[in-house]
Image 1: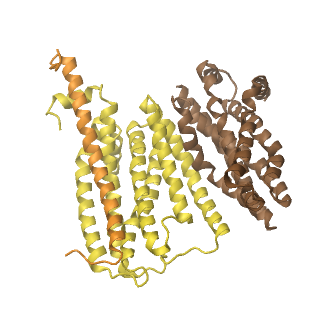
Image 2: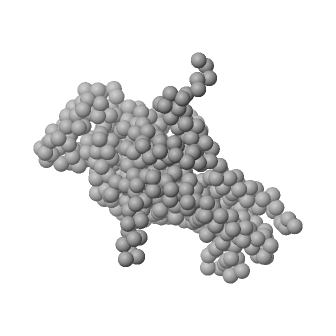
Image 3: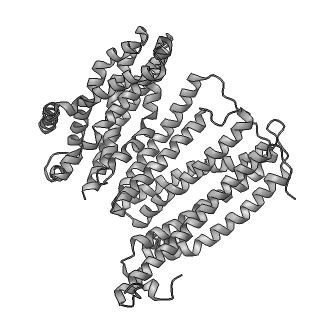
Length: 221
Length: 253
Length: 56
C-alpha cells in the first residue's frame, strides 16, 4: 500500500514539475471547445444539442494524449523490469500508475467541464449529470487507455495504434454518458445510463489491471 | 482407446512439422467443400427461391450478407478460443492460428458491411443507416483491424501474437457490451427501426440457400485459416531445421 | 441462363464483392507462399554456397 502511494506521489510530482506537458489535456479540451463553434456556427440551439457529445469526445481525446508515455520511459530505463524483481504485487503498481494518469488527465477535464459547458450553452439542468458522467466515465477512459498503452509497449509505433485500440473499447462509455446528459436535458430519468456506466467502471477496475499486468509482462520478456 | 488416439493426435498438432502437414492435407478438402456448397447455395438462391413480395430480388443479397455476418461473429469466437488456449498452454501453432483468424474475420465483416449497405440503398433508401447492427459491425471491424495492427507492430512475432491474444480476450468481453450499448443508443435516438426482414417472419422456402451458404462460408473460413497459418508458420520457422529438411527433401511444394 | 432480376445491379454488385473477397482469401496465401518460398530458396542457396549471384 505504501509503495503504491509512493509511486503515485512520485508520478504526480513529476507531472507537476513538467507543468507544461501536464496542461496539455486542458489545452486540448479548450481547443476543441473553441474550435467547434467556429466550425459549426455560434447558434445556441445547435451548440447546446452537441455540447455533451463535444465535451465527451474532447475528454476522450485528451485522455489519449499522455498515454504514449504512461509506461514507455520506465520501460526504456529498466524500471519496469524492477517491478517484477521486487516483492510488491505488480498489479498494485499498475493500478497506482493508472490512477495517476486519471488524476493528471481526467480530473482537470472534470474541473473545467462546467466552464466548457457554459461556453457551449449546455442546459443548466444537465450540468450535474454531465459532471457525474465524467466522474464515472473518465476513470474508465484512463483504464482502457492504460491497457492499450500496456499492449503497445513493445512496439515502435504505439502512437498510431493507440487510438485504433482505444476507440472500439470506449464506444459503450461514450454512448451511455452522452445518453445520460441528453436525457437530463429532456428531463428524462438518467439512472439507467449512469447505473450502466457504474457497472462498466466496476468491470474495468476488476479486469483491466490484471490484463494490463499480463500485457506488460509479455512486453518486457 | 479411440479417445486416447484422438488426444495424441491433437497434441501432435502442436508440433510445427505435423501441423504443417495437417494444413496441407486438410485445406484442399475444405476448399472443395466450400465450392460444392457455394454452387448448391447459389443455385437455390438464384433459381429456386422466389423473389420476396416486399424486397423483390434484393432478398437474394441476404444469402451472402447473413452468412457473412454470422461468420464474422463466429470467427471472433473461434479466435478467442484459440487465443485462450494459446495464452494458457502457450502452444505456438494455436497462437499463429488465432492471429490468422483476424484478417479472415475482418474480410467477412467487410463483406457484411458492404452488402448490407448495398441492400440498404434500395430498401431503406440510404447507403448507411446508424442502425444498431450496422454500427456494431463497424466497431467489430475496427477491433479486428486493431488486433491485426497490434500483431504486425511487433518485431518479435511470438511476443506480438501473445500480446494480441490478450487484446482478443479483452475484445471478447467488450463485444457483447458494445452490441448492447449500440442497440440502446439507436432506440434512444430514433424510435423507428425498419425491420422488414426478421428471423421469425422468414419463410421456410428461404432456408436452403441460407443454410448452404452458411456452411460454405464456414468451410471457407477454415480453409483460408489453414492456408494462412501454414504460411505464417513457415515464415516464422524459416531458420529451423524442419523447414530446411522440407526444402532439401522432396523439392519445394 | 442468367436470371433476370429486379434491382439487378445491386444484387450482382453484392455477389461481386463476395467473389472478390473470396478470391483474395484464396490468392493471398498462394502469392505469399510463392514469395516466401523464393526467399527461403535464396537463403538456402546462400548458405550452401550455390548462390548464383546475378551481379557478380
